[in-house]
Length: 254
Image (cartoon, rainbow, N blue to C red):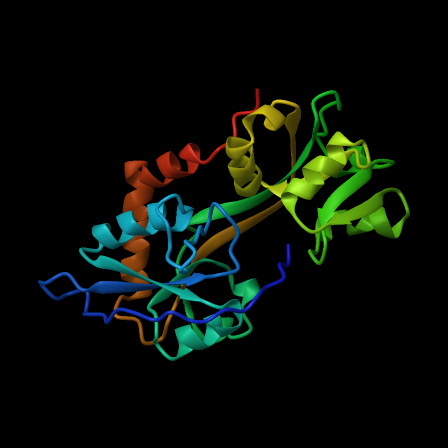
């Protein structure tokens, strides 16, 4: 999907030391202010909060590297510049397709995926392939792109109903203004935990609308190499820490 972005002030902090130093240096981690909960959850003064998926994944990565995490909240339009100029070492929840300067940055292996799924009221039969949505009204987020569904809309086989936020998508389902809606697994799981009674009325379908691997974009001036970051990510995967964190955010629909 393609996400719209807002702009706020950059908060820059932290200086790095080389990974080979005996004293633990700071792993300077950029965080996009436009990333939705639970990936990024910010306090009123723009500080990254503990429930954030980013913090719960990158604190262990920094520890694996023998470093201390130093988080910097950055407006989305300044992400590329912050990486290129070395104001931060890495920005994760990233993908080369989202960056105009991707070729000038380093890229780690996949960290975790962003997966878009179909949700509906419980009485809707399981949707196992995209074409099962033919004839249904599909709730989507205004301004987002859904390449896997474009052929349905182009042929007039479905109707697209845009809303501005996930909670509005849910209300549209509840009022029977739409039949199904598209949301990322992580975002709908976070909503469900905050709205458990409403979530009991919904189901998540087997079909996958999109699978986008996310990774860490690495500054050419980073104090940590792509290879070393990959070793850290691989160690977290082997230990089961990444799966454990992701599982803690999953929605177990009743």
